Each structure stands twice: as C-alpha cells, then as structure tokens.
Length: 323
Image (cartoon, rainbow, N blue to C red; front, side, top):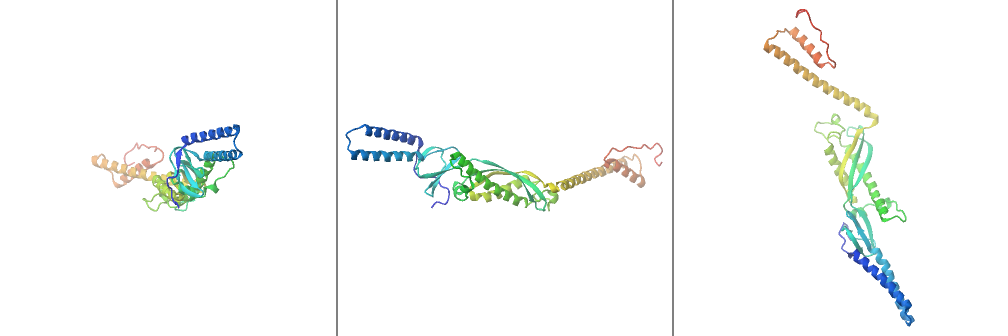
C-alpha cells in the first residue's frame, strides 16, 4: 500500500493516437452494423452473435472515451483505482489511461492569501492589530488528497464542471490555510513585543523593528502547520501592524513623549557642547576675563537661547559690563 506521493507507473498512452483509434473503432462498428442489417441470407444465430459482438464493441468504445485526460503546466492528476492510490501524473500533455481510474485534478500553481488583520496580544500583553499576506501552493499531492478532508470542505455542486470542482477544492484548501495562518500569526505575535520601548533588552527582536526576522519565523511556523496537508509557503509577510483602537491614542502620546524627550536630550547635549566651545575659545584668545558670577550668567543666557523652542529676543546692554 502506497503511503506517499509516487509517479504513476500504470498504462498511459498517447491521447491523440487513442482518439484516432476510438473514432476508427466507432466508424467500424457503425459500418459493420449497417452491413449486417442490409445483408440478407444470414442465419438468425449468426446475426444474433454478430449483433451481440457489435454491441459489446460499442459499449467498450463508449467506456474508452472516459480514459482521456489533458494535463496543463503545473497541474496534476491523482490516480485512484477503486479506492487504491496508484500514483500521480505530473507530465504535461494529452493522455489516455484505464477509464476506471478516478483522475482527481489538482493544481500546483501559487495562490495568494491576504489575511484580514486580527486582534492579538503581544509579549507585553498590549492588544495589537496584525495582518499578513501569504503565497502558498501544493507540493505533495498524496498528502493534499488523503491527509486533509477537502471533499467535505468543498461544496459539491451537482452538474459542476471539472474547473468549477477544482476551484471549490482549492477554496477548501485556502480555508484550511487561512485557519492555520491565523493560529501561527497569533503564536508569533505573542512571542515578541510591539516595539523597542516594550522590549526587555536592546537586542530583543520586536514586531515593528525586525520585520525580516519576524517574517522568517512566521514562515517557519506556518510551514510546520501546513506540512500535514502537503502545502508549502512560498512567502509569508506581515503587511499590517498597529495598536488596537482602544489603546492607540495612549500609545501615540507615549511615542510622541519619547520622541520629544529624545529631541530635548539632543538639543541639550548640543547646547552644552556649544557653550563649552565658546568659553574655551574666549579663554584661549583671552578676549575677555570672566569671574565665576559672569561665567554662570553667560552660561545661563546661552543655554536659554540655544534650548528655547522660539527665537530669543536679545536685549542690548548699552551701559558698562557690570551694569
């Protein structure tokens, strides 16, 4: 008993040659039937046997028409003979096989899944909205056909064409992929903090700052969950990340405060450097001598001018230095 995907090793003939043969057989049956009916002098027994023989050939001819199959690039046929898996045909072309084989059609072409953002909690417990886009495809036709229940998940519409049935089956796979992706996305989002402010260390990965690393981990997690269905992930990428609406405003104010503090630190650092440079330059060139009181006053004035959010308005001292 086969338990994994294997190439089909049964009888597989050229479809064009078999099509010609089937037409010739049909024309021969019709010709012989007309000749049998129009010929007189044949014994009843011979006529009966000839009629039965032509009837059997006609039934076989009708059965033979069910053995044709056409396989396009990146499409396959899973061959099942009365419930027994006989292999998978991936070769492209027009073929004829035993008409009693069930030829289940599957496509190996890549498909997109744009998952809607879902609400999850990050490592710090903050509710966030996170969404992803996924490119996936089938790679193991045995697992895809027999390890997941795609038949009951698909809506079996009576009288539907093979293309419609294939689309329904692939939508069933897509529903399976979506559920597993949501589970993987929740798991990965709970492993990491949203941004650096909530991380426990500067080297810790965060959802916002280490997108490429997070995408690789997410892809691995999804592949583990989809391996049972013979599905592989070509690419998985987070395409939406934000705080949940109930805390978005608070987190925005916190981010703004962090930005203001960082800017202020930079301004103060630069102002201190400029004041030191000015004092060192004046002392080096001995342009003017300052006592401690005047030096403190100059430092205070320069810091106010350099750190002020608005342009300072100077007041000119028209008297002496000590007035």
